[in-house]
Length: 313
Image 1 (cartoon, rainbow, N blue to C red):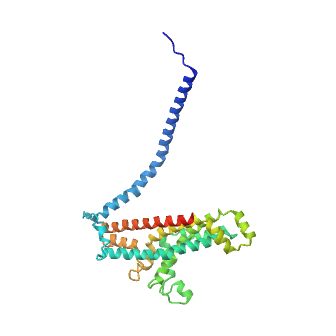
Image 2: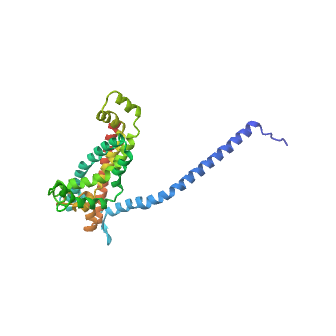
Image 3: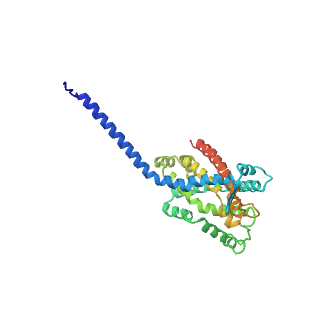
């Protein structure tokens, strides 16, 4: 019987195959181990995000009472009702959307311009840490605490602001003061967050560019407009989108400061949804409003993001 002698090339081939198989096993083990680290997040995401989204959509397709549960299948009729202006639900929805857009138009430009200017001033200041802490402090406060503070400050009778101004301004009960009051409280609380983000962008400015601008005789304003702002344009685009989303979620300020008044002029869409679900007990209609609001907000954010990205690029 002839013996087969294994040549060196065959040994090399087998050794290479065993190495490849060992590498594949290690890759599979590494991927499985990585997946195990992600599993807790996936479970939490499905329980606290995925399930509410699916369940809320199911609720929007039914006549649903929060106490009694489903009272009958409604299908898409509750969405169609929101486009029928002869119904009370549609009138409330679109009035709430109008009020929300009004607040967005008022607040977003302020939350873009003011933090940007302050961030640059702090960036050029020798007391960076002190000013950053002062402006960021209101951000850590709860919205309830902030609205309670500003409600006390802006009381028509005995309010600290009116006493200081020696005036009788109806901050919380008449327009346009009501919107101005809500906007001041919102800006005071959220300005610090945007400021820190823009400040982080300014810290990436090349010092050589700033020094060259100073040697060329560029003043502080010219340096800010021509050098600093273009360098943080991507950050500003991010702030526009996030501030818009945050302003669309206006709720506590209107509820606690003005109660949606005077009349319904400061009642945002989130407050309409809240009243529809917990006061009128029409959970299905409220869910339909919430999903339509989400679609509108997603469309606005999509358009806004692409417009700002094109200008920033």
